[in-house]
Image 1 (tube, rainbow, N blue to C red):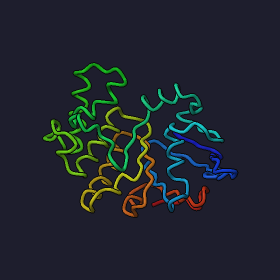
Image 2: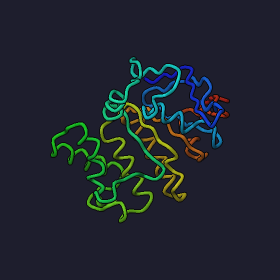
Image 3: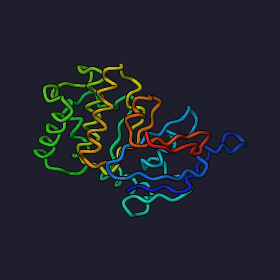
Image 4: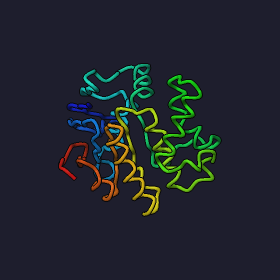
Length: 224
């Protein structure tokens, strides 16, 4: 579903060129959950930004559903809107919107009719166990509940690929365990590929595969 070949990324620091990614190659299949692990500075966040079509300044080739990855801002925006979902460490919910309205946002961008937006959002919130909280705003929810809203928002449009950046880092142990199970369940149920950068060994162990990055290179790749 997603193939990336020889991905390289560098930036200028004064008079020096710093290589962040050094020829990273890999793939993700539909309904596969892959952990991206490695120490801080290994290139995890940079690779997520590239595969999430947020950073277009890289070298290498990416194939997504048999098509070349976009290299212009307009086409990258369309890809993110139509095919990708994102889950962030800090949830990134809109504070003035209810849980339902936050989950509706991707569908609004796609131009869905209002009644279909509302029904899809309510169905998705029920699936993540938050039907009673659909009218509540983020400040009225616990951290674990906010992350479940964020996952519902990422999954509501049935994206082909979900990018998750440290989704359990801000959560207590109980909430983190629930989020790990929920992500895995939705990945397989919705047939979405999920790439999750994590330092959490429980999250990594729940994935189908683990890719270890070190110093901008793949140091190891193995089944969880």
